[in-house]
Every structure is written in structure tokens, then in C-alpha cells.
Length: 198
Image 1 (cartoon, helix red, strand yellow):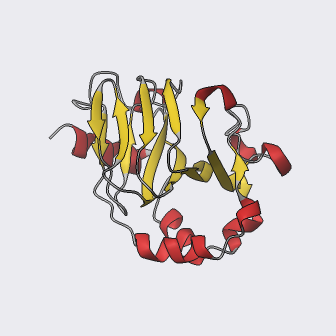
Image 2 (cartoon, rainbow, N blue to C red):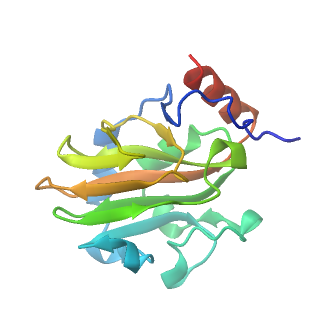
């Protein structure tokens, strides 16, 4: 069954979904993770400073675990780190759709992700990338297609990341998001359509 969201049916390319999560609880999980668990982001030509992540669900082990392999499909599985994160697991379990890559991504204070596009990640492609901010501040400048967006802690966002977007962390803290790559099913499609067309 084709569950892709038809092109043009979403009135907005950035949507706050009607989901709320316990950011403070997720931060307690973060506090238990060792610094060496954070791997440098693989897209080194895209950023300045420190952009790193921890794979919670991945298609690979070892240094490639952070890479969301578009060819992996059914090979994704929870990593050992996921088993250590009780509160984050509860958040992930709220998503009633097939999950591909699930990662914690950290943009250190003073770091920049230059403008870029992530292809095949719009609702019309049948796969979306959702963001749940865990640690953030309005001083973090996230811009998509020229528009500034602030995502509060514990909220959940769909963005069409095939559009140009960039991030500058001008704050004194590291910005950390839980990032989920999801396959669109009826549950997710209906929520996107209901939220983004009103």
C-alpha cells in the first residue's frame, strides 16, 4: 500500500506534530552516556566545529553506525546504547511506524552546519526525518528555506529537509536533538495531513 503523502497536499513544509515528550527525562539518560560514545558526524565537509552523534538504531556497527544508509532497509536494529536509555526508549516507542535510523545529534557551542539539502526525506518520498529537541535554546539559529525556526525542548517536528537548511549554534550550550528517520505509514501520514493542512 502506497502511504506516501501526495505532493502538494501539505500546506506547510515545516510542521510541529501533536506530540510532547519529557526532555528532562531524556537529559537524565544523556548524563549516563560517556563522552567517547559520541562519534564525529560523517559529513565532514558540511560543518565547522564539532557536530557529533550517538547511534541508537542503526544498520551498521562500529564507526559507520551513525550513517543512515538508504540501501539498508530491513537491516536496522537497536544498538547497545539504546538499551541503556530507558527514557529515550519510551519516546521512540511512541512512534507507531517503521523506524530506520535513530540518533542523538549534538552541535557544540559555536559550531555551524552550512546550508545543505538532505534528499529523499520529504513526506512525498515516503520517508521523513523527525526532530525531538532534547537540549536547545532560542540562541540556536535553525533556518530552512530562508525562514528561522525555533523548536522547543520536548516538541516534535517534521521538516522537508530536501529544502535548503542550516544551523548556527551561537549559544553557550551544546544543542542535542533526538533524530528519527521514519517510514511513512497510515498513522504518520494521517497525523501529518491533519496537522499540516489546517
